[in-house]
Image 1 (spheres, helix red, strand yellow):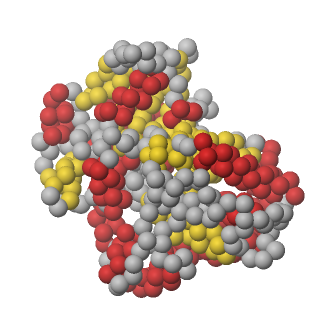
Image 2 (spheres, helix red, strand yellow; image 1 turned 90 degrees about the horizontal axis):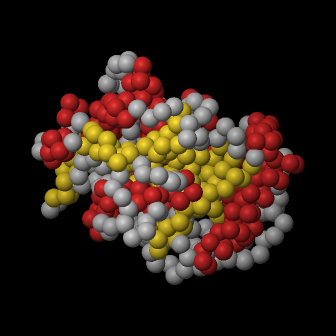
Image 3 (tube, one colour; image 1 turned 180 degrees about the horizontal axis):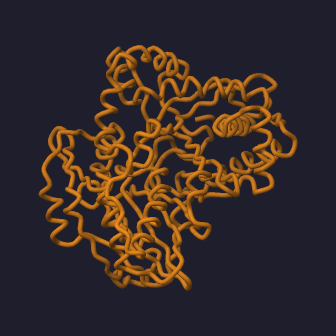
Amino acid sequence: MRIGGLRETLEVTDRPIVLGPTVVSAAAARSAPASAVPPTFLQHDHLQAALIFPTESTYLGVVTYIPGVLDADALVAAVTGFVQAHDGLRTWFEPTGDGFVRHVLEPDGVELEAAELTEPTGGTEWTDALANYFATTITPFDWPGLSVAAIVRPAGFEVVFVADHAFSDGMSQALASLELTDRYAAALAGRVQERAISGDSSADYAIDERARADDALAEALFPLWDRELAQVGYRLPAAGIDLGIEHGTRHSRTIRSRTLLDAEQGRAFDAVLADLDASLSVALFAALALAQYELTAEERFWTLNVVATRCGNRFARAQGWFCNFVPLSFQVPPNASFTALVPVVRAALERNRTLARVPAHGAIGRLVASGREIATRDPGFVTVLDLRRPAAAAPETADTRLFSAEGVTSSLGIWLGRNATEYFLALGAPDAPATWERLSGYADRIQHVLAEIARTGDYRPVQRVRAQVYG
């Protein structure tokens, strides 16, 4: 189980089967009553962007393999039960003059049917045809904001599940692959699965988030947010590496992935972490900081850490966007080494976890109300993913891959982490030759840092020349 770009992940050589709503079900969704529950903060920003840039694809996806001959009826039953179980997947948003209104289709209103994808025109290949189908059918402003396809393989088939980012995140996609596989097996066996699953709904999460943004603890933590952002001049982070484009210019995004450490190197790196009592996040942020320090000589590492906010078991299996983008900054000390940096990063991440209790939008809103001027831009971010637990729950044949639509960006997104067999890295950045020439060297440097730590137990930067401009 790993994450990558759409072009790396999706390969379609023959006509796929797609699942969509029946006419009756689509009509029922359009007439679903308005809900008093507002969108989450991230959903609201996402919806505003979707109105401004309606042609930009913003969906997330997952591909997982199921052995055996495809039973289309069983797949329809599995996906129907899956959508019925998660209110976020039955949601669409109506733009209004002063915001967005949530509409939620009742579970019994979900009716899906399977059909072959229409023949592509103009010489388009099937992979592009399916990607275009997703791009043109998935929107947060109509239901369903998701789609499912089946790609037949010689000894089985792949299920492709995609959802608009308003209704999903990376962990939701990993969980979707597991639940769809389980529901398909149950449908084949004639077992009736319970519709409901443990955990609260995405609407419950939106209510909870609004409360967390304005309670007594948020009031107490506000000075910590103020202090953290004051250290970086009340600005959101750009990419830590100069991307070779004019700041703020938007380009089509490309996502490229690679293996950072193979199985043997990964085990050695795990042993180093155990000796240092360092978490996966501590180790990977330390390695990122050292790689950036070597390339830029910049002594402050500064990014947004994408923190999961599933609140323990409460939303553990729910489908939705359960994240908070929290500022993470720390100083790289003189004569830095990996082992010396670990306690620095550990302390920074402890502060980060404290800050994460308050939704970023609520904290920034308080800062603005207090008179602070926040320099906003398309921010750089880092997501650390530990996919070992969901991978362990999947069948050995699953070969699950997470992916994202290319979209558009002016900054750098970093996803890195651990799965059952490797450490991996994915970079999402503007599709410009100068950008990827620089990012190739950046990825090489990250890989080198990790490999040396795995080999020797430590790493000390050997080059501190400002080779690139810090963003």
